[in-house]
Image (cartoon, rainbow, N blue to C red; front, side):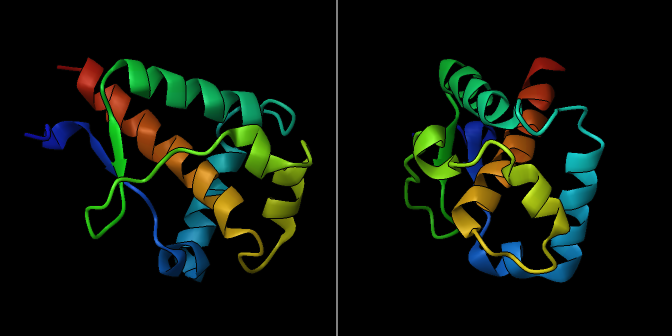
Length: 114
């Protein structure tokens, strides 16, 4: 049986293209304190920590979401600059990694606060 507290739901494409959601995600990125070159490592480290704590990633329909290798998706280490400048979602898989970073950080913080 799945531990619902350790399931992280992956953002849909609809969420990622929503202007209000995108605005909040950009706000979180700007206030994260993570430099643009540190983002790929920060995301990968977060996934490793989540895996060690037993977290699973699922789509909204409940299907398992396999975490990709960040380096395979990320490409240019300066992507954050492009993300912050873009008005619309141009790279949903990259934006999904950014979103998952924050969803995972919150889930881990909640787990550790108990």
